[in-house]
Image 1 (cartoon, rainbow, N blue to C red):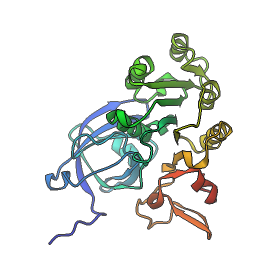
Image 2: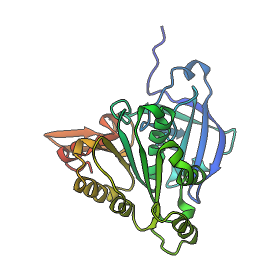
Image 3: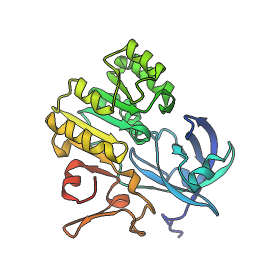
Image 4: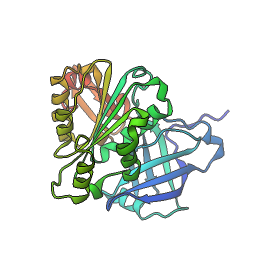
Length: 294
């Protein structure tokens, strides 16, 4: 009997590439080995180790919900040697993946609750999988509010997809709000003229300040630059959210994916966490108990 090694990379082919911004691309992948396709399952919030032989590997969050066996999407930012090499690949080229790893978001726990998704920049990628999952199981969740902070219109990920929610989300009981940092951005300004209550100049925290949010029966899910967490959590707790109602993904800390390299260890002797194994999804309560986690 052959026992599958969880560390063995799987070969995947690129079936489509979308240019999203000047530094981010969306890669559509399919697994090559048909024997592994039905065994490959992932949940919102999990990540993969993506590699190119002779170059290296990098942890990348899966950004879609699983609808079809053996197919998935990765939004990859060009920031280093590995991701630069991935960006040079073309449709039909192959790369290697291992995983999925991590705990993911507790979608079952959040059933029958309202969802508040707060993202900054590339942080929208893993939260997109949460949004897609909730929409795919729409009757299992209450109202959905998405707050997305970007630098400018040209840096907005999944633009057409989210602009459709911006304009038509009410049909699905989804409210999509946008905050943009560049006050001179004309296209975002036009969106703010179209719906001033759903698009405004400023940081993503301004959306929280300007929107009626109640913690009753609501879970908040947050992902973005490290500096964003402190201010978002402050706004949420001031509005009555408990630490157990706030989920955060610490994907930026990950390295090997299996807790061997020690890169993602955080905390002290009383509470040590391996972000790749114990996370990358944590509650704010976990962050309060674990030094350096947030």
